[in-house]
Image 1 (cartoon, helix red, strand yellow):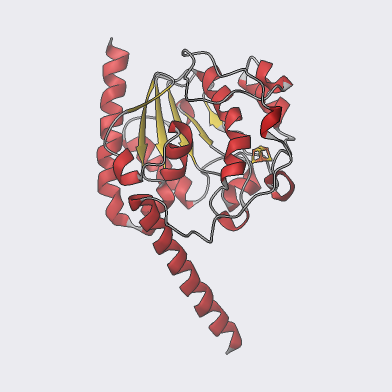
Image 2 (cartoon, rainbow, N blue to C red):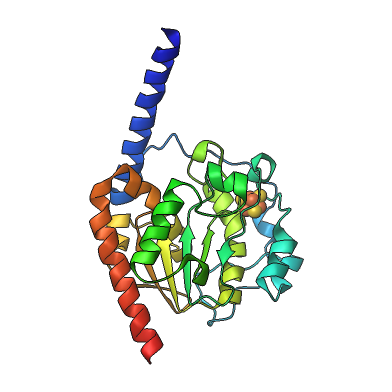
Length: 258
Ligand code: SF4
């Protein structure tokens, strides 16, 4: 039947896509990656002003903020209001809902994923689908509650078909995350997945190299582990993730004891 043939072909493509992503997450980018689109963006690099994120001490590796009013936001709510209509990249046109982030505005812990998926796009909240339910279990397993941490993504709008964010999309969206982190001033950051880790830490290292050690984002201890969606695809990665989050919890306890 044509319908079942179509379904089989689609499943095969999904399997190939999953394999490529898993391999890339562990071993780094593929030499030729046809899945990365060239996003056409409207804002230009030359529009950027020489104003860099500054709470925590300036990091010389961070580019400057764009000269835009939202950079003066002094609370998360102000920031959300200032950027929720953003159309700086093509994802602004295809999103259903803008996904700012959710959680305690005074959180010690910030969890950062890649981008909203289908469920997140519909509900306007990060990590609410199957991967979100698994993330909740991981959070609770190391004695945090979802409502006491802050959860957000590198991108605030969903890439169509859950494709990987294009570099240009990250470039235009990540200053919002920098400002969120300035306002939150967390004690620790956990990046979920390779894309989040590479974008925040400004590195091209593979997940295999980024995992299992501490990094610093503007002086904040930062760890990178698997994205919960990757754990749904490959349960073998649950154990290393468990080790990561246990180390994360241990560091948190050491910090709050001081
Ligand atoms: S993904 Fe980020 S930069 Fe692109 S439209 Fe959405 S908020 Fe703006």
